[in-house]
Length: 86
Image (cartoon, rainbow, N blue to C red; front, side, top):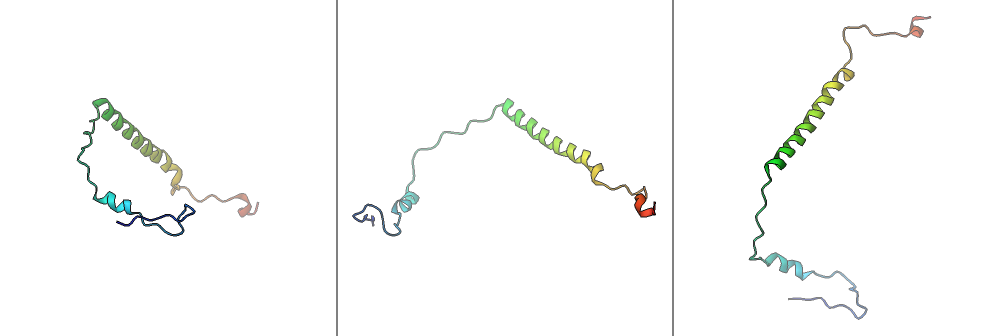
């Protein structure tokens, strides 16, 4: 395997091929990680409650904001007094 040699100054003058990255792809560990801990009932209920609160807040903001975004269609367009010649 090729191992790059540093010049006498100590810093490489050009790009250095990183052979250890290729070695890392071939390395396999025989140690299995510990199993993930399951969330308790309280943690799951808290996550659901937080999610429902966020969704309810977004829906509430949309419902409360819809009247401000809509234009009334049953009232005639208001004209200013300047446009009537007063």
